[in-house]
Length: 437
Image 1 (tube, rainbow, N blue to C red):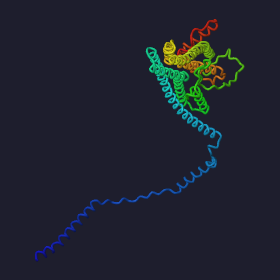
Image 2 (image 1 turned 120 degrees about the vertical axis):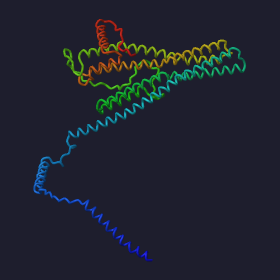
Image 3 (image 1 turned 60 degrees about the horizontal axis):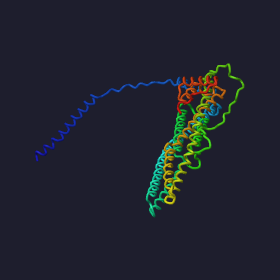
Image 4 (image 1 turned 45 degrees about the vertical axis):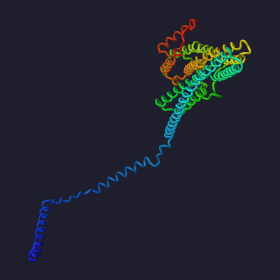
């Protein structure tokens, strides 16, 4: 007990000593980190000078607003501003319309491509099927003529007759629609729509389109739709016209030209890249295209049209004769000979007409004739325009003509000189203008 009391008496003294030592340490630490306070410095702003500056600024602002009242300024109310805003709106709307037309043209390119492939497959499949049917019917006629009698003879005769009749009917339909010509039409339409798409893209890239550009592009799209229709019935082109006519895929608008009475003789035309020499050169090229190229394609087109008409009639006619001959096998002596010979000839005619794609050749001549007519009309339109500033640049126009004819500029000029000399001497021109067709 004595020891416990002694310990309890010692504890307060220990705690008091420890607290006193900690207090001393904290005092020493505070003395060590004590930072003296800096004196406060007051800056006085001259209120009178600031007030004078504000008043001066307010006075100048009031003078300016009195001279030019800002609330009365309305930029869109002036005529010039209205014209600028309307022009900007119309330009952006024209560009939007051209992009919409560009999408439609791209869709037409895809449609004509697919339809062209489909109709080319028609030509191949129908040609092979009709030939196989005709040859099978001929084989049956031969088997019936060799040793058939009774019911086998009747079965062979009926089968051969039905096959010949089916071949004749299919051949009539095939000759009517001319699948090879249909495929060539779609190939030409695809090429021309791709050309129009490139021209629209060039127009949008090089300059700002106008509403007149939109209307012109729309007319060209509709003209192409009319020249190369997609439907097979109703709107399709006549495959056997009375006369060869070149294709026309551009809008037929009448040129409104104010003819001037004054002559350009004795004047040197050097405006917009045009000169008297260039005009004379274009006239000679136009005459060569008219006298040589267009006449030659018209002659060849009429020749191919006649051949195609003869073949289109001969094929079904021979197949029909073979059908009648096969029905008379066993009853008439020469029936088998007629059936076999007519069937073989029908197969030959069908193969020549649709295998050689005579309809495609006719359409190719139509397209080439249309190209030459378009070139001739383009040159005529350019030369009849008296305002030289409204023409296309002369040097650029000459370059385009040379590329369309597959020549260089020097070759084109030599051709024009040769045409002029032949016309003066009264000699027939022996060279064609185009080297592409």
